[in-house]
Image (cartoon, rainbow, N blue to C red; front, side, top):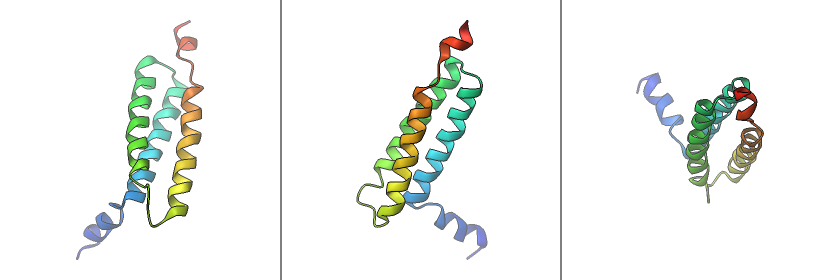
Length: 91
């Protein structure tokens, strides 16, 4: 098995998929905070939906601590997104 095959197997767990989704959400929100346009906020909203689905897939996970940490991180990111004010960029 090549190193790439092994790496793919490791990153294809529900936990890693959820963490990756929340990380992408974080990056998307960071862009929206820096440049609060409707387009970037919409992209962050779409990323939020994807991350929520990925985190929901962790329900009943054998690794409860990882699931809890990812859910907490998702909650923080949702708060960050809620604080983005698009109207400031349109003034």
